[in-house]
Image (cartoon, rainbow, N blue to C red; front, top):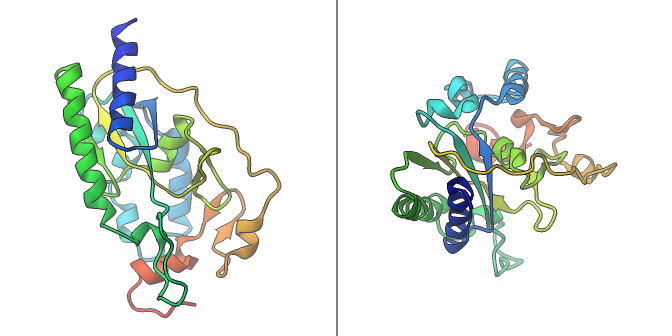
Length: 226
């Protein structure tokens, strides 16, 4: 077994040990096609007042801007579907927010994950992210074959659906990479498009962020929910 294969297997076992449901690895490289889509999306104003989406464009598409010498992007999936559903009469809270702050929970797991990698593999320069930096998580998850991007813009895993946080760990060591893009199983289904209450889901897997209800409840503080 080569060193690269051994390190890859170790990393995937460490990911499972930290409680991550899936682990995929992709070569760290420019996200050329994603850059084109992001630029088009921004030019059409679909980010609304989320000016931060315009910032650090180069970092979003080039992992080496976040970790010098980056060679691999490790993408993880962490299921957030709650064990217990909310009481029917209680105010509705999004499932991802129903519990402890996921930033803190996953950040701790990423810290332990990287520490374990360094202990077994050796000197590794790496950084973990969970909604804390300009990282295109879904794109990397798709490149590793962990799922496909659905018509609703979410990453969908064939076995487990889409209720996942998508942490990433960018490292400067070469690893074995996945088989690439997963098959798209959405087919002719348009349920998400048909049922979106604000018509935010557009054709070609494009989401108009300025129309999405989560934009009004989280990002835009000065407007009523449509």
